[in-house]
Image 1 (cartoon, rainbow, N blue to C red):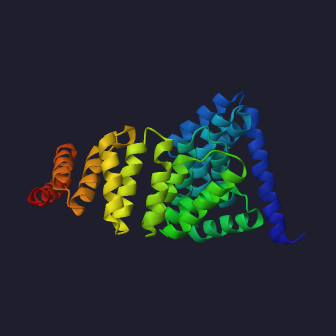
Image 2 (image 1 turned 180 degrees about the horizontal axis):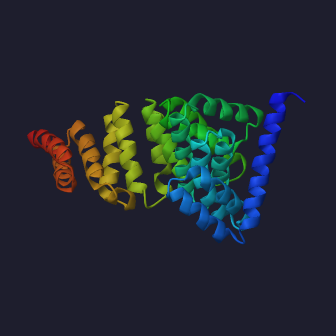
Image 3 (image 1 turned 180 degrees about the vertical axis):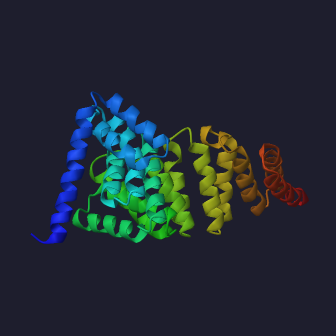
Length: 301
């Protein structure tokens, strides 16, 4: 047996026996998780690995397993164990009980990959996985976020989001409005303004909590496409509906972006109305000043 292979096999046996020993030393998921969390939160990442791996084995539900793997993702990355880093992230992405957990975990994976010099290796991993299996939803998902956050290739991001939506359609699933909204925004960043506007308008009626917001987004994309008439129509529709649940989370942006469309379209009265609200709702002085300057332009109309 070659010496290098023997060493690797020995390490495998040592790690494997350690995990088995850790499992045997804990009677339940809660006990193992408590021990692992204490070490993890104390900055002892290497020492937390055993208890956390035991917790992952002892957990009964996917929710609990996801919690463990979110921590293990960091432990593996900091320890240079990148194969296990990917596996933990993929488990969470595949089994997350709600979309935000999958999204945050994917962002964490990509942040750690960038930090540890694994950016190119990560891209290669998921591109090759997708070549082997064109229906690999996890790879499409990771690659869409990779291109949106790491290399900022929004055209590529749009391609992978389109693949996700096409896969859903082929499998008879309903249109995911959140994914479609991300695609519409990726289109805008990739300067595909007409496609962006049309998709925002298509998905607007599908979610009442974001209907007015999506009409506002469509107006912004139509404006960038140079189609002021369509931009004005979409902006007036959003204005007539008023800020929905999505807009309530960012009212200064809601009003300023509608104000921008109305100002560009020569609708001074409506532009003034929204920029006044933008100035009032803005919390940062920088934005208050910026909106106030636009307000003065609108008043001159």
